[in-house]
Image (cartoon, rainbow, N blue to C red; front, side, top):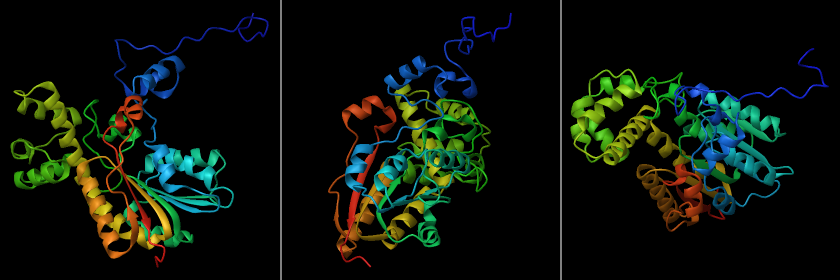
Length: 348
């Protein structure tokens, strides 16, 4: 008798199994891709983000700052997984539109499809695969009027961090790449091998405030590191006299600093901050979410300069931080800093 016979009880389907306590292959992590709801719930309850997904940060605070209204124009400078945009889009309807930008070709295609499948076609959501450093050009080409609200979430998405093929994290071994756009620019391995110690040391200090920049750069500069594990092992060996927590923090800072350099993140951010006033309407609301001191310093300086010049009528006196509840529910939200600004009422 066939197993497809409707008169028979359904055949129990066992969830995928793997050897050992934890799966070692990213593609086998069924709990990270929602294949087992019970395990997925445990991952979320622990404050972790399931691999292959992203949890938007400080959503309620951002919505309060931006105050989206029907018929308004919004710009999301960092589309990512689409979490923030999908909160904005329904609130802009009817007649509102959103311009979304993202440089990552791998995640852009997935997010574009997700947004379209939820009913927000190109007549409502214009999505462009580009770096936000080209904001003015992209906004002009969109044909949209100046935006009433603008969001920039400067964090690296969880999809990028968790995928070992991207080379962003020390947790799993993978090629030492770190490019937001894998088809453009110089991978991290080439950058480290090319830079002399003095330049690498300056990079670690500027991009991550690394206190051991000189020591680390003298060991790493000019060397060939094929994988994230290879680089992490070299750093751990150099710092073996430190405790585990200090080593882990140093690893994160070094990877952060190199990633910022590989993608020229500070240069792109400086360009974005200069262009925001050119693309926003009088009284527009602006929210910028940063995740480390180097970004926050630049955002703070640009907003304070804009306030002194009359470009902005008001700015946040200090950065907002995630609530204790959000930090507990989403561990990756902990370093987030949210600043806001309101364009002048007579903005040109």
